[in-house]
Image (cartoon, rainbow, N blue to C red; front, side, top):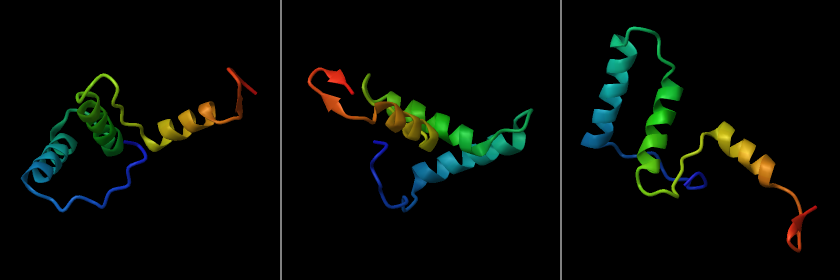
Length: 79
């Protein structure tokens, strides 16, 4: 899913509801909330609820995973 590059959603009642909840939390929660973190964690929860194998990665998480898994593979080992 991290590699899926879709067009921005056209909207609709579900997207509007999500945006209203984000706005409400930003305005009414007892402490300041980092919007990007709030949305990332919501997306992680949504995607991970699909099945045990699905994951949503933030840009930073994806970059770290790509660094850790890059390299040359030969036989059964990694070079």
